[in-house]
Structure formats: C-alpha cells, structure tokens
Amino acid sequence: MPLMSADQYRESLKQRKPLKIYLLGEEIKDPTEQPIIKASINSVALTYELAQDPRYHDLMTATSALSGIEINRFCHLHQSTEDLQKKVQMLRLLGQKTGTCFQRCVGMDAMNAVFLTTFEIDKKHGTKYHDRFINYVKLVEENDWVIDGCMTDAKGDRGKHPSQQRDPDVFVHVVERKPDGVVIRGAKAHQTGAVNSHEHLLMPTLTMREDEKEFAICCAVPADAEGITYFYGRQSSDTRRLDATAEGSIDCGNPEYGGQECLIIFNDIFVPNDRIFMDGEIDFSNLLVEAFAGYHRQSYGGCKVGVGDVLIGAAAMIAEYNGVENASHIKEKITEMNHLNETLYACGMACSACGTRTGAGNYLIDLLLANVCKQNVTRFPFEIARLLQDIAGGLFVTCPSAKELANPETRKLVEKYLVGAEGTGAVNRIKMLRLIENLVLGRAAVGYLTESMHGAGSPQAQRIMINRLVNMDEKKRLARSLAKIDE
Ligand code: SF4
Ligand code: FE
Image (cartoon, rainbow, N blue to C red):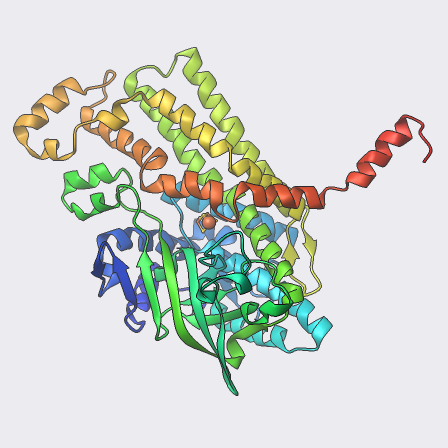
C-alpha cells in the first residue's frame, strides 16, 4: 500500500505485536489510546493525511527511483536538488500544521544516508550491503512505513570510546554471531517517534576504532521485535493531556498535536543477514554519521521554520488580542522574528540547492551549508521565542487554569477580568496564551528549543564540521594574492 491514509497508519500501529512501553511508571498496553502518545501519533498521521490531499500532493509525494511507483516523500531517496528543496518545504508545511515535531524525518534522513554509504562500502570492500538495502527501501516504500532513524547511543562516559566503557552495552554492539545473522545489545537515546514507527534503522553514532568493529553495526529491526523495551520520555506539561475535558484541553495549548522521544533498549535482538547494512566496516562509520547528521541538519531548516511561523503568528495574534498590534516596537519585533525565521529557511534551501549527486545516485545536501543551517538553528529559535515572550506579556505563565472556566461562578470572573482588546473574549486570549506557553516552555518547546540545540548534534559538532569543510588554504591564498605576496 504505497500511500496509506491516516486511519490506515493508525490501524497499522495496532497491528504490531504488543510493544513493551513504560510511561509515567506504567506499562502501556495500547499506545494508540494513551492521550500523551495519541497526540504524537496525530502528528505522524498528518504526514499520511497530507499526502492524500490534492493541495499538497506535489510536496508530499514522489516517484520511487527504485520501482517507479508513487510514494510518500518521507520514504523517498532524493533524486535531484529539487527533491532536496521540496523536502525542506514539506517539513516547513508540516511544522506549520502541527506546531511540533512530526517525527518522520529521521527515517527519511537515515535511509538516504545508509543508501549512499552502503554503495561506498561495497565499492571498497566487495560486500553486498547496497543491494540488500535497496530491497529494504523497496519494502519501506511499498508499505509506506515510518522508519525510526536510530543513531545516538546512551554513550556512558563521554570522555571514553565504546571499547573503553566499563559496560559496553551503553553503545549498541554485536554480542553474538550466527550463520544467519547477529544478535545486538545496547540502547539508543532521544529516539524521536520510536513508538510510532514500524521499523528502527540503527546506525553507529561515531567513528569507530580498529578494536571497535562490533560497534560498527548498521541494521534494521521491527519496532515490535521481541526484546525491545521503550522508556517514553517525560516532558514538560505532558500530563495536561490526561485532563480530557474540553476546558482541560485548553491548558494543553496545542490540544491535537505532540512530539515523542524515547529511550530504546535493545536486549539481545536477533537481526537476520538481509537486514544488516554494515557490520564491522569501521572505515565507513564516519561517512554514515556525517551524511545522516548532514541530512538532519538540513531538515531543521524546514521543520523549525514551520514551527517558527506558528510562533510569529501567535505573536501577531496576542498583540492584537492585547490591543498593541500597532505599537511600533511590536511591529519591529515581529519583523525581526520573520527575518530570523526566513534566514533559517534560506539556509535549508541553500544547502539543498547546492546539493550533489552521490556515487549511489541519490542527492546529498551541501554539507558545509547544512552545518551552517543547524548552527543557526541552535540560536535563532531562542531569539524568536524570546521576542514572542516579550510581546505576549507575562500572562502566559500566570493565567488561571482552564478548570476555572468549567465552574460558571469562577468563569464569570475570569471572563470579566481577562478580557482583551475590543472584540476579544477572555477564552480566546487564554487559548492563544496557552499555545504560546506550549511553544516556549511546554511540550512543543522540547522540539522548538532543546531539540534545536541538541538534535542532529549539539552546537560544537557543527563547529567542528564547519572548520573541517571550509577551505582555509584557499582563503589565505586569496588574501596573499591581493596583497601581492608571492610564496
Ligand atoms: Fe522532523 Fe524536525 Fe522532528 Fe527532526 S525535529 S524529526 S526534522 S520534525
Ligand atoms: Fe530531531
């Protein structure tokens, strides 16, 4: 079923074998019915819904380079710089519509990175990973799966390499070899959309050394594989979703959509040979890490911009509700927010437009510009969020609970005293303030702020790449040449 509907996607999650998920001290039997998880499923479901909407067809779908069928763009291997740009535009669109992380990009980024890496491994080592991976991608496309790109290991002592850790399990590694596959053990942290996925595509998290071949493993395992445990991340204001009343949903700020991050424990999972795409080729772990990180750094030039659009819209709305939309400093601040947001978009589009064809045939973004994009993402959303808080005023953190609206007596007082500008009722004002709270302090701030800092690699990781990718010798030569220095 190359293009599933949102309902078919939800149903496909129910069809999995039961997952072992822990959330707030409880084992969750049906994640599709748990309110916190449900909101995160709604976000992923929108990637299916919009693909069937004629208005978004061009952005949300693509033609498979492997089979010629029409597929969801989230399953696509980019075939041109235009594809790379459409990816950024698609992520912006989804950021605008969900106001949060919609989780499906990590799989698309992992697939494109593994595709180009397996080609290079085979070329050097005469292995057969690339054809295997092509067969796997065909399955992903045909089934319209959500793939969870799993890179970040638990890591233990950050000052030590995998082979030096007291407990090697803090990095995913091979613990047993069998004729028909391997057994892996370890944990991956911060896994976006883990519980909402059909499959996990595991990749090593850093450059491995000669004695770390067991850690250089890239493979795919089903999300419902026996032996996987999920710890669902506790995030700010998440329990507001447990108040299911109509008023209670106001306090969620964004009642419909949420994101999801998990710690995944892989406890002795058997992986058959046809799902292994790297096994011990330490000389290629670096290429895989850089390609995946590069693609995901590009992604942020789309998704964070879409969520940024929501912040800017919220700033303009609350200014209107407060009756200050014509104040010159408010207009100036909103201009600045737009400038910062569009700069991020420009970075996402530029690294896409300057992408190049890889040996494997898919397209890779310009890595230097993708790293510049992400470096800006570690800063600009914080300034945009700061300006939004400035414009909103302090009420978004002091506002009475929506439960006060459920009681007619207290509601009367709230409505009387929290009324806004002419024509603005207190309830709409509160709804907008709660959305703002959600975006800058609450559940969506996880994706918009903390993930902007650390997702796809913390700021220092991009600075190392920027340093490595700029041609300093050429810059020095330019300066010498103009100064007429012969050396
Ligand atoms: Fe996609 Fe952005 Fe979420 Fe990453 S943070 S999965 S790019 S929406
Ligand atoms: Fe992310």
